[in-house]
Image (cartoon, rainbow, N blue to C red):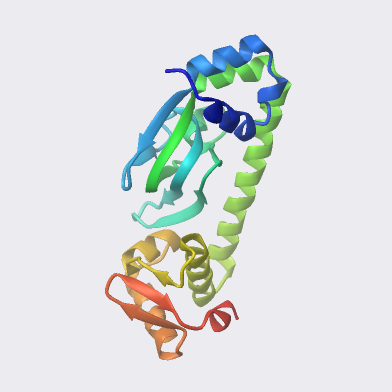
Length: 223
């Protein structure tokens, strides 16, 4: 199915190396790239054995996370409109020996650049390799920030950061999320999350209700 002019514009802006490709390479990309849609709750990537390629997020929201041996989850980062999902093509990155999972948090429309097509382009154009290096550097920075939070930040700080981030994402002080889901995001246990949220509530920082949280004092939460 041919791309619309708007979709071509999206590919050009999302893939900065596009304009450095030859017309033949651009035509090859148009033939290889596939439009896809994912619904909330679906899994886009389920470990190192899954290596579909690069997903270019046109609209939606994804969560990239890891799972410990005990089954505890921790979110590495999220992807939004015009982001590129790199770990869905983890097999093209040498020495990646850990499993990363990607779930759909909001209905997502995207384009898939298959692994084989990317590899061919990377062998032909240094601009493609530079793009991947920049992308890996950015994601590595995201992951290092999470490691710093998990290892060195107090739990109340981690929880505060998560609530502020979620409020910013939803553009609302009312966050519809369960304590279990928060625990999955920050690599903790539900009981620990609940205890700290109740403390926040006693301090007048948040209001808890079934299925959600309302931030009452954002300044205090930031402090």
